[in-house]
Image (cartoon, rainbow, N blue to C red):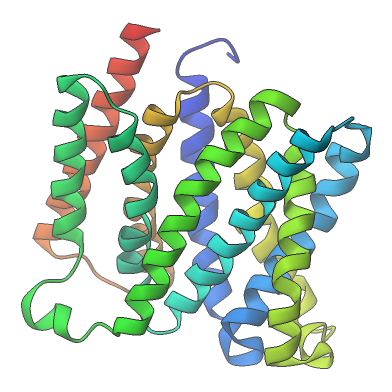
Length: 283
Protein backbone atom coordinates (compact mmCIF):
# COMPACT_ATOMS: atom_id res chain seq x y z
CA UNK A 1 0.00 0.00 0.00
CA UNK A 2 2.83 2.41 0.84
CA UNK A 3 4.05 2.16 -2.77
CA UNK A 4 0.66 2.97 -4.23
CA UNK A 5 0.36 6.43 -5.82
CA UNK A 6 -2.84 6.89 -3.81
CA UNK A 7 -1.07 6.26 -0.49
CA UNK A 8 0.09 9.87 0.08
CA UNK A 9 -3.35 11.15 -0.96
CA UNK A 10 -5.06 8.95 1.66
CA UNK A 11 -2.57 10.13 4.29
CA UNK A 12 -3.27 13.76 3.41
CA UNK A 13 -7.05 13.26 3.60
CA UNK A 14 -6.69 11.77 7.09
CA UNK A 15 -4.42 14.64 8.11
CA UNK A 16 -6.89 17.29 6.91
CA UNK A 17 -9.88 15.66 8.61
CA UNK A 18 -7.94 15.44 11.87
CA UNK A 19 -6.67 19.00 11.59
CA UNK A 20 -10.08 20.60 11.08
CA UNK A 21 -11.75 18.49 13.74
CA UNK A 22 -9.03 19.62 16.12
CA UNK A 23 -9.55 23.25 15.11
CA UNK A 24 -13.25 23.03 15.98
CA UNK A 25 -12.34 21.53 19.38
CA UNK A 26 -9.63 24.14 19.95
CA UNK A 27 -12.08 27.01 19.57
CA UNK A 28 -13.85 25.80 22.70
CA UNK A 29 -10.68 26.58 24.68
CA UNK A 30 -10.62 30.26 23.67
CA UNK A 31 -12.75 31.47 26.62
CA UNK A 32 -10.28 29.90 29.08
CA UNK A 33 -6.86 30.75 27.62
CA UNK A 34 -7.48 32.77 24.46
CA UNK A 35 -6.23 32.10 20.95
CA UNK A 36 -2.60 32.62 21.99
CA UNK A 37 -2.86 30.18 24.86
CA UNK A 38 -4.63 27.59 22.71
CA UNK A 39 -1.93 27.80 20.05
CA UNK A 40 0.77 27.43 22.70
CA UNK A 41 -0.91 24.40 24.29
CA UNK A 42 -1.42 22.78 20.91
CA UNK A 43 2.25 23.11 19.99
CA UNK A 44 3.72 22.29 23.41
CA UNK A 45 1.80 19.04 23.78
CA UNK A 46 2.34 18.18 20.14
CA UNK A 47 6.10 18.49 20.67
CA UNK A 48 5.92 16.41 23.86
CA UNK A 49 4.11 13.68 21.94
CA UNK A 50 6.32 13.71 18.85
CA UNK A 51 9.75 14.04 20.48
CA UNK A 52 9.89 10.61 22.18
CA UNK A 53 8.26 8.91 19.18
CA UNK A 54 10.47 10.30 16.42
CA UNK A 55 13.63 10.80 18.54
CA UNK A 56 15.08 13.75 16.59
CA UNK A 57 18.25 13.71 18.74
CA UNK A 58 19.42 10.91 16.46
CA UNK A 59 19.68 13.40 13.63
CA UNK A 60 23.13 14.61 12.66
CA UNK A 61 22.55 18.09 11.32
CA UNK A 62 25.11 20.50 9.97
CA UNK A 63 24.62 24.26 9.94
CA UNK A 64 22.51 24.07 6.79
CA UNK A 65 20.34 21.33 8.31
CA UNK A 66 19.70 23.36 11.47
CA UNK A 67 18.74 26.33 9.31
CA UNK A 68 16.25 24.22 7.34
CA UNK A 69 14.65 22.80 10.48
CA UNK A 70 14.60 26.18 12.26
CA UNK A 71 12.79 27.82 9.34
CA UNK A 72 10.38 24.88 9.21
CA UNK A 73 9.65 25.20 12.91
CA UNK A 74 9.24 28.98 12.91
CA UNK A 75 6.80 28.91 10.01
CA UNK A 76 4.89 26.09 11.72
CA UNK A 77 4.58 28.17 14.87
CA UNK A 78 3.56 31.29 12.98
CA UNK A 79 0.94 29.39 11.00
CA UNK A 80 -0.67 28.04 14.17
CA UNK A 81 -0.64 31.33 16.06
CA UNK A 82 -1.98 33.44 13.18
CA UNK A 83 -4.73 30.93 12.37
CA UNK A 84 -6.05 30.84 15.92
CA UNK A 85 -5.91 34.62 16.12
CA UNK A 86 -8.10 34.68 12.99
CA UNK A 87 -10.57 32.19 14.49
CA UNK A 88 -11.43 34.65 17.25
CA UNK A 89 -13.56 36.69 14.84
CA UNK A 90 -13.73 34.78 11.51
CA UNK A 91 -15.80 31.57 10.95
CA UNK A 92 -13.80 28.36 10.64
CA UNK A 93 -14.65 27.64 6.99
CA UNK A 94 -13.88 31.21 5.90
CA UNK A 95 -10.64 31.33 7.87
CA UNK A 96 -9.42 28.11 6.28
CA UNK A 97 -10.38 29.36 2.80
CA UNK A 98 -8.44 32.59 3.35
CA UNK A 99 -5.48 30.71 4.83
CA UNK A 100 -5.39 28.48 1.76
CA UNK A 101 -4.10 31.41 -0.30
CA UNK A 102 -0.66 30.27 0.88
CA UNK A 103 -0.55 26.72 -0.51
CA UNK A 104 -2.59 27.91 -3.48
CA UNK A 105 0.22 30.37 -4.27
CA UNK A 106 2.72 27.50 -4.06
CA UNK A 107 0.64 25.52 -6.57
CA UNK A 108 0.49 28.48 -8.96
CA UNK A 109 4.18 29.37 -8.72
CA UNK A 110 5.37 25.80 -9.24
CA UNK A 111 3.02 24.91 -12.12
CA UNK A 112 4.32 24.75 -15.67
CA UNK A 113 1.61 22.98 -17.71
CA UNK A 114 -1.58 24.48 -19.07
CA UNK A 115 -3.62 21.59 -17.66
CA UNK A 116 -2.38 22.35 -14.16
CA UNK A 117 -3.61 25.92 -14.42
CA UNK A 118 -7.05 24.69 -15.46
CA UNK A 119 -7.35 22.62 -12.30
CA UNK A 120 -5.99 25.49 -10.22
CA UNK A 121 -8.54 27.86 -11.76
CA UNK A 122 -11.36 25.47 -10.86
CA UNK A 123 -10.08 25.23 -7.28
CA UNK A 124 -9.84 29.02 -7.12
CA UNK A 125 -13.44 29.38 -8.29
CA UNK A 126 -14.53 27.01 -5.55
CA UNK A 127 -12.58 28.94 -2.93
CA UNK A 128 -14.11 32.24 -4.03
CA UNK A 129 -17.58 30.74 -3.74
CA UNK A 130 -16.82 29.57 -0.20
CA UNK A 131 -15.88 33.07 0.93
CA UNK A 132 -18.88 35.28 1.78
CA UNK A 133 -19.81 37.98 -0.71
CA UNK A 134 -21.74 41.25 -0.61
CA UNK A 135 -23.30 42.10 2.73
CA UNK A 136 -21.87 38.98 4.36
CA UNK A 137 -18.36 39.98 3.32
CA UNK A 138 -18.73 43.43 4.84
CA UNK A 139 -19.38 41.83 8.21
CA UNK A 140 -16.04 40.03 8.26
CA UNK A 141 -13.57 41.46 10.75
CA UNK A 142 -10.66 42.98 8.76
CA UNK A 143 -8.16 42.18 11.52
CA UNK A 144 -9.29 38.56 11.52
CA UNK A 145 -8.98 38.44 7.74
CA UNK A 146 -5.44 39.85 7.99
CA UNK A 147 -4.50 37.17 10.52
CA UNK A 148 -5.91 34.45 8.23
CA UNK A 149 -3.90 35.76 5.27
CA UNK A 150 -0.77 35.92 7.45
CA UNK A 151 -1.40 32.29 8.37
CA UNK A 152 -1.60 31.55 4.66
CA UNK A 153 1.83 33.10 4.09
CA UNK A 154 3.25 30.98 6.90
CA UNK A 155 1.54 27.93 5.39
CA UNK A 156 3.20 28.52 2.02
CA UNK A 157 6.61 28.81 3.67
CA UNK A 158 5.85 25.74 5.77
CA UNK A 159 5.32 23.70 2.59
CA UNK A 160 8.60 24.89 1.09
CA UNK A 161 10.75 24.55 4.21
CA UNK A 162 8.99 21.37 5.36
CA UNK A 163 9.64 19.64 2.06
CA UNK A 164 13.26 20.78 2.09
CA UNK A 165 13.82 19.55 5.65
CA UNK A 166 12.00 16.27 5.06
CA UNK A 167 13.75 15.39 1.83
CA UNK A 168 17.19 16.19 3.23
CA UNK A 169 16.90 14.92 6.78
CA UNK A 170 13.86 12.60 7.01
CA UNK A 171 10.65 12.54 9.00
CA UNK A 172 12.39 13.04 12.36
CA UNK A 173 12.59 16.73 11.55
CA UNK A 174 8.86 17.18 12.23
CA UNK A 175 9.41 16.58 15.96
CA UNK A 176 12.33 18.98 16.10
CA UNK A 177 10.33 21.59 14.19
CA UNK A 178 7.39 21.13 16.59
CA UNK A 179 9.72 21.82 19.51
CA UNK A 180 11.03 24.99 17.87
CA UNK A 181 7.46 26.10 17.10
CA UNK A 182 6.40 25.49 20.71
CA UNK A 183 9.31 27.51 22.08
CA UNK A 184 8.44 30.35 19.71
CA UNK A 185 4.71 30.51 20.54
CA UNK A 186 4.76 29.63 24.26
CA UNK A 187 5.76 33.17 25.36
CA UNK A 188 2.66 34.58 23.64
CA UNK A 189 0.43 32.10 25.46
CA UNK A 190 2.03 32.80 28.83
CA UNK A 191 1.79 36.55 28.33
CA UNK A 192 -1.91 36.35 27.46
CA UNK A 193 -3.26 33.68 29.84
CA UNK A 194 -0.60 33.21 32.53
CA UNK A 195 1.01 29.94 33.57
CA UNK A 196 -1.70 29.01 36.09
CA UNK A 197 -4.54 29.21 33.60
CA UNK A 198 -2.53 27.77 30.73
CA UNK A 199 -1.59 24.59 32.58
CA UNK A 200 -4.72 24.19 34.72
CA UNK A 201 -5.25 20.43 35.37
CA UNK A 202 -8.83 20.48 34.14
CA UNK A 203 -7.73 21.93 30.80
CA UNK A 204 -4.91 19.49 30.09
CA UNK A 205 -6.98 16.57 28.67
CA UNK A 206 -8.61 18.89 26.14
CA UNK A 207 -5.27 20.47 25.28
CA UNK A 208 -3.75 17.03 24.67
CA UNK A 209 -6.69 16.08 22.44
CA UNK A 210 -6.24 19.28 20.43
CA UNK A 211 -2.51 18.60 20.12
CA UNK A 212 -3.07 15.07 18.83
CA UNK A 213 -5.81 16.00 16.36
CA UNK A 214 -4.46 19.35 15.20
CA UNK A 215 -0.69 18.88 15.24
CA UNK A 216 0.88 15.56 16.18
CA UNK A 217 -1.13 13.34 13.83
CA UNK A 218 -1.60 15.63 10.80
CA UNK A 219 1.95 17.03 10.74
CA UNK A 220 3.50 13.58 11.07
CA UNK A 221 1.32 12.42 8.17
CA UNK A 222 2.06 15.51 6.10
CA UNK A 223 5.79 14.94 6.46
CA UNK A 224 5.30 11.53 4.86
CA UNK A 225 3.23 13.13 2.10
CA UNK A 226 5.80 15.88 1.45
CA UNK A 227 8.39 13.18 0.73
CA UNK A 228 6.12 11.48 -1.83
CA UNK A 229 4.36 14.32 -3.68
CA UNK A 230 5.76 17.36 -5.52
CA UNK A 231 5.03 20.75 -3.96
CA UNK A 232 2.59 21.57 -6.79
CA UNK A 233 0.43 18.50 -6.21
CA UNK A 234 0.63 18.87 -2.43
CA UNK A 235 -0.38 22.53 -2.57
CA UNK A 236 -3.34 21.93 -4.85
CA UNK A 237 -4.54 18.87 -2.94
CA UNK A 238 -4.67 21.09 0.12
CA UNK A 239 -7.54 22.89 -1.61
CA UNK A 240 -9.60 20.25 0.18
CA UNK A 241 -8.73 21.91 3.49
CA UNK A 242 -11.61 24.46 3.30
CA UNK A 243 -13.95 21.57 2.53
CA UNK A 244 -12.95 19.81 5.72
CA UNK A 245 -13.19 23.14 7.54
CA UNK A 246 -16.74 23.68 6.32
CA UNK A 247 -17.74 20.13 7.21
CA UNK A 248 -16.19 20.47 10.68
CA UNK A 249 -18.12 23.69 11.16
CA UNK A 250 -21.31 21.90 10.11
CA UNK A 251 -20.78 18.86 12.34
CA UNK A 252 -19.24 20.42 15.44
CA UNK A 253 -20.17 24.12 15.42
CA UNK A 254 -23.62 24.02 13.81
CA UNK A 255 -22.60 26.04 10.73
CA UNK A 256 -24.77 25.26 7.70
CA UNK A 257 -23.74 25.37 4.05
CA UNK A 258 -25.68 27.05 1.28
CA UNK A 259 -26.19 25.47 -2.15
CA UNK A 260 -23.47 27.72 -3.56
CA UNK A 261 -21.07 26.51 -0.91
CA UNK A 262 -21.85 22.86 -1.61
CA UNK A 263 -21.17 23.52 -5.31
CA UNK A 264 -17.89 25.12 -4.26
CA UNK A 265 -17.03 22.01 -2.30
CA UNK A 266 -17.71 19.88 -5.40
CA UNK A 267 -15.51 22.14 -7.57
CA UNK A 268 -12.60 21.89 -5.13
CA UNK A 269 -12.91 18.11 -4.88
CA UNK A 270 -12.92 17.76 -8.70
CA UNK A 271 -9.89 20.06 -9.00
CA UNK A 272 -8.00 18.08 -6.39
CA UNK A 273 -8.79 14.81 -8.16
CA UNK A 274 -7.67 16.33 -11.46
CA UNK A 275 -4.31 17.55 -10.20
CA UNK A 276 -3.72 14.18 -8.53
CA UNK A 277 -4.44 12.30 -11.76
CA UNK A 278 -2.17 14.68 -13.67
CA UNK A 279 0.63 14.14 -11.18
CA UNK A 280 0.24 10.35 -11.39
CA UNK A 281 0.44 10.36 -15.20
CA UNK A 282 3.67 12.38 -15.11
CA UNK A 283 5.05 10.08 -12.39
